[in-house]
Length: 107
Image 1 (cartoon, rainbow, N blue to C red):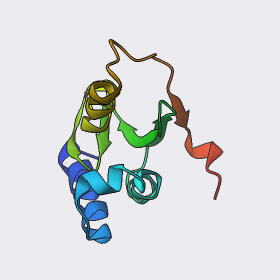
Image 2 (tube, rainbow, N blue to C red; image 1 turned 30 degrees about the vertical axis):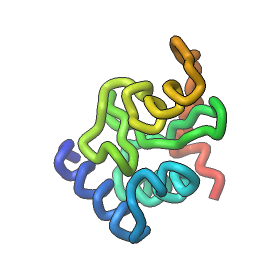
Image 3 (spheres, helix red, strand yellow; image 1 turned 90 degrees about the horizontal axis):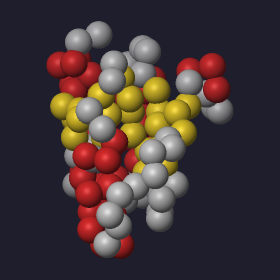
Image 4 (cartoon, one colour; image 1 turned 90 degrees about the vertical axis):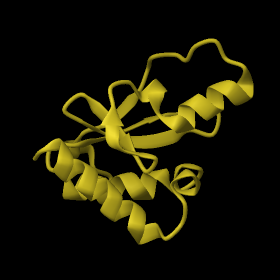
């Protein structure tokens, strides 16, 4: 699957919600990530529980969420985490991230 196809899967998932991307990332990110995970073979659901926590998709070294359908190299570049870091005045985040492999799919 190409990066463009992953981006299209991300955009498709976002459209299903009918709300702004930031709102998806502020409470429905796991549901969004599940839709993309099911559409993109080889993807992983990743997440971190800093503050309120956030889930996103990892695929071929890039991180995707509702606000960043084209992906970024580092999860700390996702706008959700940029906002969280600014809100709490953090200098840096811990690097531990939980990644859900396809074999661990809980549903």
